[in-house]
Length: 484
Image (cartoon, rainbow, N blue to C red; front, side):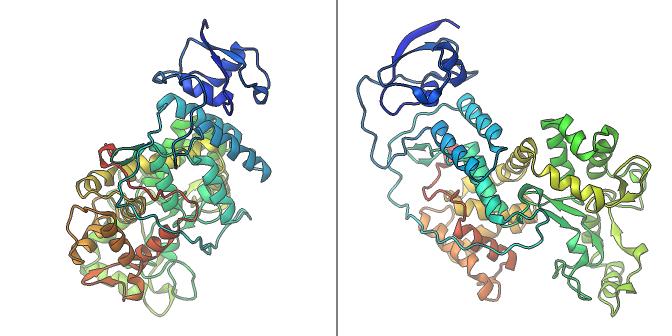
């Protein structure tokens, strides 16, 4: 590469910050100048800037000569500098896998958006929230790690990339979206983080001494199967299959290695099962694709009422196994060639899913899928109603994830606003906070806000989001024009 104009190193500049300033690769900049140890940059040292810029990166404006005082209350750390600090912290707690990911985040950040931070105040209506972290109790971890470890990994993974503040608020960037999704994920995951598993506990229920998930109309009737990952992608609905496909596209060789134990055919059988259903049942009209969807269609019919009565009988054997509902996707398959067919939340399959939760490419796939398949779909209505706070967007996303995008549950926030006689679209952040706090307090008000029923789980999620235990929910308001 041919060098262009020289750059004198100013006090406080790093190799990463200079590279980002000119939108070039930091490694290429170091190589151009024969620098091996990046920590030995000297003030007033002259660097030659390579001509070739990062792919698609806009050319940054060179700074004026002489020291420039940072704007008040504006974070002057670059993403690379923040990532370097986080990496050092990660090494201190022996999270060696972060090195590769953080380097990738640096490169992606420079490639996708080299942005100038604007020292523009956020509108005065913003009322900063005070967060008092309250560690939640999580059970069921199979890895021996704690939920605090998972929170630390999420902080290190997504970083605290400086918010880009424009005139009307904070830019809702891809990284901001992932941070909100990660905050929602803490409402769902256990200490296994991206490998968190729920082993068909909706079917198990809480009757007969079982410790599964109770209060569901289909407990002991419908097998939901494995729920997995940061927002518990479910086997029966097909969302697990879609995220597995995303993982495969991200790194197909690692996918075959982990899920097939090196046997690509076994790994493929898993993707087929969780998307289209087990091959021998795909043309069988007697077996529904989704057991839960089938249950919803018969629940109030005589057949549905009969199943309910049997499932709630005096003994577990009242409902025969032959009458339990399993969709085409929730079927046992072999984990090895010639082996017995087992459910994918058991035996060798269980170990593979836990192991996959530790793979960086698969972690990224989970977050990207959550953003594209859930979070992005709530934005048009949020934009229409001028929802601008991170906590409100997080709660709306949590409801859409649990109830489905476009479901009645996904519109809970707006229903509560109407019940409280708050005009839509919102015209200030205090009204959003009033709705949010009402949902958080609903569990002590008989799970209601006026005439609107608020499920206990949603009230709990609101309280967890309000705690903001990993500090990802910005206290500034977003600019709705950046919602897309």
